[in-house]
Length: 285
Image (cartoon, rainbow, N blue to C red; front, side):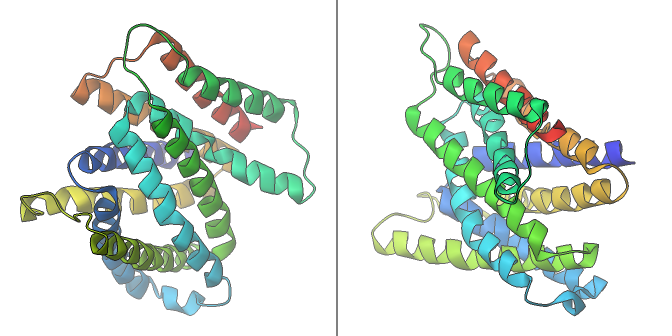
């Protein structure tokens, strides 16, 4: 059961990332974040009411609020990076977010084993190679790499905060709901400020109602992935769940290859692969 739900997490996160990247190529990233997270917040609110999650309210929810403030920055950076592409490089590099929980553990007195040290070295090498020069292939802009690393830092921080925000499954639903509401509030404020400065919130033709299912899929797939990961971690070793769930960039890369026909430079593909291997070593260590 652990393997099944963890692999489902990878599938859902990978498809959500791919969908968010595609939407950001046509609509401003802030709009994508606000619309998709609003739909997710509405559904999560219903889930919290149905499961009695309000009974889990307490001081720990401040961690969820903090996660909600960091989350829009991470999502905005990640979607912009995916829009710049190629997704086959951007998505694996974002898995470096696992380094944040490892760093927190070091501060709290934990010491990494040989596997984790090797994972850090391999991941850093992957970051360097992913931006390496070559004469042919899909170029990776420095801005895309920087945005991806910012997103990874943000995602890792959110992971740590959400872990502290709940101790039960119903508490997790409530924490995720509070996080999404804060996401929408922070992202909406940023979007309003951007519009005030003259940046359009929507493309020239507006936001067609027919595109709402795509936004809903992105937001709900992210929420469902959090749920399947919680189930996987509760029914088996957390290390196994974390390793299998961290394979989601493979789904994004395969989707980009299949639907967008992306072609990567050999050096970039090697770097992205090393970053993914390093992430798996960190999680497994």
